[in-house]
Image (cartoon, rainbow, N blue to C red; front, side, top):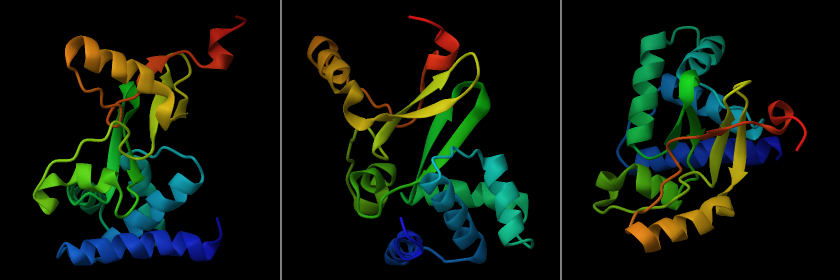
Length: 173
């Protein structure tokens, strides 16, 4: 991705916030820039790590403000989050206008929308080394279909990582 495209993602997200009547603050801008950069680098940042990076961009933004900002932006549907075992919660930028944004903020749209993979992919985490990897969005479709048919259960992998062992920790097959 080039810098122009990267800026466009953040600008599109800011435009979406304006459409929703949300305020655009230096803290919100810094949080969005940090998360966008992490997404592009395939990083999975916790609130603490986001706070550290935001303090570099905007030294006047207090850590508590970062936490409140993450909550507000997730509620507005422009961020998604995933719970990872013992390492906490990590955040992603929702694609503006995507089903993820609709799912994350049903109240803003007056309806509920369900999508199994809120930000385009599922997550897996190694229980040995803690490594987090992105899994392709369709990898769990067969399991989701089987659960729907057998139990009427709608699988949603967008908010929690599946646990197991990565290729390095699993050893030889």
